[in-house]
Image 1 (cartoon, rainbow, N blue to C red):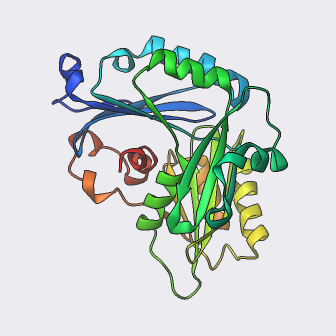
Image 2: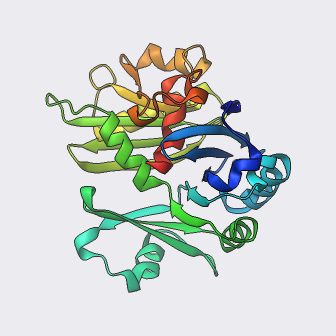
Length: 279
């Protein structure tokens, strides 16, 4: 993602702005906003797609390179995106048992911190494991920040942007970053699948998407794939996917931000994932 900055943005006025960060396995994206207007957005790719141990280094690199991250802000929100996530039925969930629930499905290292995020609309609660070193570093760099899981806000806005199709009631979604792909699938309002997969080339992306169709027993010739993130129509990934998946549908830009000056040059789907963190 290139950097986009509105003419209205000023570092000297940063104390009047809000900063939202989206930290994933392969990049940090940032968005500066005031009320419902986007003033600046951009990101920094990380060298590795090794979520557990390279994110602290990547975070330090981004902080050192981008003055915009070191400015004083009125409010800072940090959203973490991880593949170390489990979901549980909300009616059966007991918060005091969260580590037991998580360890039954995924290994937990000593000192891991669990982020809890409830999503009543899907009747689910999500638990996301965060390495303690990453959490400590985030709090050192941004002591006033609130830290959240990115998944619930992304799910909510995605549900709003993808039309419900009564003929099949399935909705499939892929979010693309430079070196990873996030897959989600719903049937009616039930989440069926959520995975984050690193990839090296376009063929890897195609494999993961066709695997999702096969896992759900669906046909890529009948069920459309909605997508967001950093996938342009002239990319090798898009061209390969279009050969095997009949209907590729980019997510539209959320209407609340349609008039923001610094979003005007972006293809609509590129901003959706980051905008989801502040809706």
